Structure formats: structure tokens, C-alpha cells
Image 1 (tube, rainbow, N blue to C red):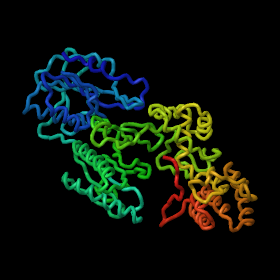
Image 2 (cartoon, rainbow, N blue to C red):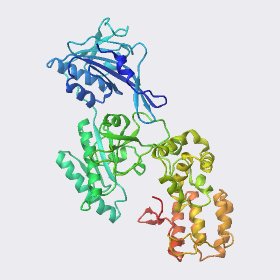
Image 3 (spheres, helix red, strand yellow):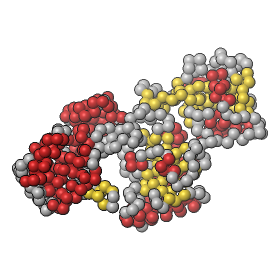
Image 4 (cartoon, rainbow, N blue to C red):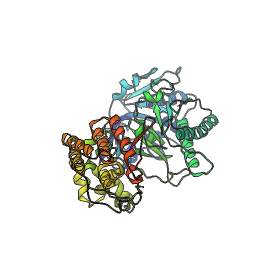
Length: 548
């Protein structure tokens, strides 16, 4: 006799939930072998199997699509009889920090049992009556008391046989290349790689839109099987083109977004509302619920686009599972802590790239010198410690006191939290003020050996101006910079610092002008290397970071 408690007892215990979501549970009990049509239909309609045994299983769905799925099966079973009992109840979905998942049922439901069924039968919890009626063609009727089930007024699902209850779950898949389509390198790289993508689309018989101006490829995916197939095809294509010497590769960002009411047109990428610049290249982005459904074939990882609490509509990335064909091609994904994630649409800090503070408040301004030894320490760190170090930052850092808290963590230098925090600010160290100090003192001409020989600090006003800028004393920095420029009109140093001063004032045009002047006045390759400059209207880094 199927007993629900046996399924629940085998689920993992979630001691600390990363995500809690209400939804609908489907408890199935069957006799003999369960017809594959049942499991395939539930999956196609967005129901996730959370536990399964020889004669019973439990599914979770976060939308009313579950009622369409069961109604479709009920209509199908009238022509193809099968011994399956189906119960639909309220269910809470729990996700842990390692993305393991479990469910929670009310006390009245978790100790139910049912006799082996002889036909297809559906009962619905009375609390779900209104949700059932939102689906056109579905009604309910009283089922009366049922032995072994919870003592509630169970309802029977009544489906109109004249309707097919087709699923509304469909996606648009968007592929966008990195880089500016006005750059020759980007045009050529994307042209060659997009030809391979279009070949895959034609082989699968998928229609698509190719937006030449934006360089995007858009296509509709009308069912879950197509979503799985195309994600697999794209990841295998990327892997093959990366590894084969005769193949062309260009980094792309990809997203599968629910179609909802979005029109299929060339301006679709703008209407999705994503910050494309923050997306991880070469990994498909899907909603969390879709990620769990694809989890048997892919490894999912959270994609942080803001500080808000994650839910089943948040974004995650997919990677082919390790040890299988098309494995993750040597990447490591770790969960990004809330402490380092900025609000959606926020402007990122020039110095470090984070979006939770402006450049004037960047913690990197309090760091005295670059620390390249961090990468050697990081290379020796256990991967589990690295992930726990990122996770531990959330408990140490508050959003309202980010600068002081992150500074304290970095100064501790005793655990993985401190190491990972320092590594975050070391990534872009080559364009931070601490590197500017070394460039000014460098005696060498080339960047690689630029900091092996350093001269003492020389020059009036300029060092005081840099210190004032670090401390946020903008008026003092401006006064000292004017003095320095008047005394050293042909020196690149005042011009380089003016660029940072205007940057923190929010005037990017003037910042670029002064950095171009600094580049023009520089007299060695080492002097020229750190300045960001403008090429055809886009930011292009002149710095060459020595980090991995």
C-alpha cells in the first residue's frame, strides 16, 4: 500500500532554506509500472519530481499548469485506462544553500495512505478549488470521505473532454555576442560563430530572427523538450568550437525567457529587462524552476543580478554535468553572496566593478598597494573553502555599512572570507589608485618589470592631491591639481589624476579627455599602460591585468 510518509522520509533535511516557495503538490500512486506518458506530461507542464518509489511519487509545481497536466492525463486515460491515483494538495518547496531541495506538507497530509488503484482517479484539496476554476474547462465536485486520506472535504476534478488543455509553457531563446558590433574584430568573430549556430537551428528545423544591427539571434522554443535539446546543442557547440583548432568561437550570452505576452520581434532583448553586461558568457540563463527541471542533465548555479531575495523566477545558469560529454570546459562556478551583488540597474563602480557603491566609496581606495600574491594563495585554496568563503561574507557584511565591514574582513587575513574578499578587489587593481602611485614612481619602461625599481615620491602638490582624492576631499584635490598642472604643464601625472577626479564627479567625457592627454604626454610604455581610453565611443582598457 502506498504511504506518503515513506516518500517524505527519504527527502533531504533543509536546515537553512535559501528559498521557500508555495505551490502545488501531486502525489501519485500506481499499480504495476507507471506509464511514461504520466511522467513526461508532468515534466512538460513544469512539475518537478521530488521523490519517487516503486509504486508512488511526489511532484511539485509552482503554477496552475499542474491542473492542465492532470486534466490532459484524465482525458487521455478515458481512452487509455491506467491504474493511477492522483492527489493535488498545497505544498511548500524548500531549497538549501547547496541547491538541494525538499518539500513541506501540512500535518494533516503527511501521513496519508491509499489502496492500490484500479483506474485513473483524481482528488483535489478543497483549498485549491478557486485555483482549479481559473483554468478554462475545469470544475470540481464533491468526492466524499476517502479511506486513508486526510479528513478534509476532498473534491474530484472534472475536465471538459472537448478541450485539449495544451500547456502554455513556452520560451524565447536569445543569443547575444559580447563586444561592440561596430568593432571589426567583433563583426568577424560573431559572423563565423553565428554561421555554426544557424546551422544547428536549420538542422533542428527551428525558425529564428537574426538581428544584424545588434548581432542577436532570437528563436521561440514551444516545449520543454526543445528547451532541453537546444541548451544541450549550444553548450556542445561552444565546447567543440573552443577545443577544435579549425573551428571559430566567439563568446556569447544566452537566456531562455518565458514567452508570456512578449512579441517575437527584433527588439525582444530590450523588452526582457536584463542587464546583458552582467551575464555570464557561454552558459544558458534560465529561471530557477526551469533549472530544477533541467537538473538531471545540467548542473545549475545561481546568477546574481541584484540583492533581492531569490525566488523561483530568479535566474540561474546551466552547465553540462562533470564527467559527461561536453563537460564544463574547466570553469568553476560559486554562488555570489548578497553582500557583493548590487541592485538591478545600478551603475557599477569603476575601480572594482561592484554595483553596491559609487567610485568615491570604493574600498580599494584604502588599499595601499597591489597584492599579486593573492592569486597564489587562491590557487592553493580548497574549492569547498572558496565557496564557503563567498557564502561567509553575507554573515559578516551589511548593506548599509559595506565599506567598513569589507575593510574589516580584508584586514583579518585569517580565513577564506578574507582571501576571497581581497581577491574580488584585486581583479581590477591595474586601474585603481594604488597602481597609479606605483606607475608614478616606476623607473622601468616596460609594464612587466615596471614596479621592480621604484623612485621616491617626487613632485609638489600631486601626491597631496592624490591623497585628498582617496579621502574624498574633492575641493582640496581640485585646488592641489590646479597647482600641480600650473607647475608641471607637460607632465602626465596631473592629467592622469584629473581623469579620476572627473570620474568621481560623474563626468565621463572629461575623464576620457584627461586620460587621453595623460597617454599623449607619457614617455614610456609603462606610463601609458593604465589609462582607459575611448575607441569609437566605447571604453577600452589599456591596462593588462596580471591576474588569472
